[in-house]
Image (cartoon, rainbow, N blue to C red):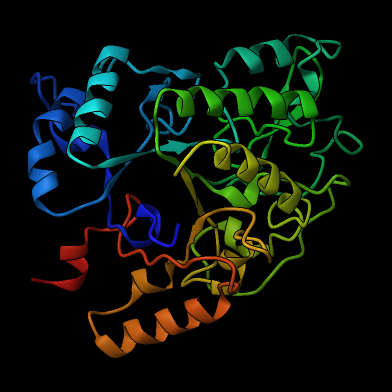
Length: 336
């Protein structure tokens, strides 16, 4: 099809926790979103990107998932989700779920098994290392601060966490893990979800040799930004995994995927476009964040869009993004 909703549509992000609270407990929820579907339809949107609603201990507000098939009770029930999905579809609104696949919660059953012993079949579903002469395995830093390695006293090894220590990184190189995660994705596709937003997609694959990242120079507020992240993200092996992922998504009609590509401020169109695949056979869309830091100026936006479209392969499709949950609201940044 030439016309596809994800090519030409407007996608509206909802951060459920702060969107609309239906029961007065101070937290937004699925019934609250359902109440506002007529309002959202009136805006003329074509799809909703829903930030994580899966079961989570909420160390990172849902970006630490302990059950990919569950709905966290703070947001509602499975019945609430089914009703939300049906009512959104009845209004012609597609539903995109946030898919956090770089890591799980430390309370996920997979990690509990992996952590139980070095001999457990799921040990290699996460990234473990002995360390180097009593020290951390390498110099990798966590995005939120500190070292990216946490010592596990029981099994006497380190595990990798690119974010919080409660968010252990999974091992996409393990074929059993990959099959299991693809099964979780298929579960939601079977339920009728229209697509997925992939969190930090370019961080999924790490260097097998665990080499140190080189340092860089600059006035950066975070230690994480003082490294060039050539070994803990943007690995060439990612493309093979994304092609497998694309085949799964394309086995269902009119579904899509969009990736959050972690880049240095203010953006990197070539890197973001790389996750689409040279033949357009990886992600359907990816975010280039160059435009997020632009002032409200036609010339500024034109420059960003031209650079982005020049970077996107002819076989792929660009998308433009103005806002997300990591940024101040558009109205605050652009005025009006």
